Length: 135
Image 1: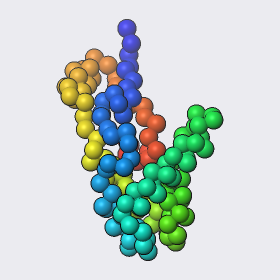
Image 2: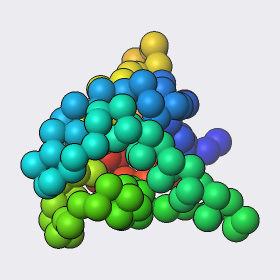
Image 3: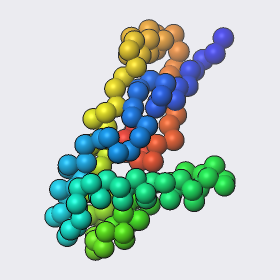
């Protein structure tokens, strides 16, 4: 009999939008404008999507992972934004805030976890690009 059950988060306990262009970018875009971004909101979304694709290609040969700050570095470089490490973290945080609004629990997951927690220790594993999201 197992003592612990381990769950993946995204796609198992929560549903999310796999694509990156349908989320609300308004908070992230507003922060970018504050930092000197002069591109259109449409182009801003495309720059983020392109940066993600580039990072995915970079790590694919070794099945690696990357951090959201790696994506942000590409974004600010492409947009010509001179951002400090703190400002990049704020930009990423606002991106995640918009993306997270589209994350919803799988129907019945909360009840299932509550019932299982009475009999097992539960653990969560996730390969998110932004560790604070699941800590």
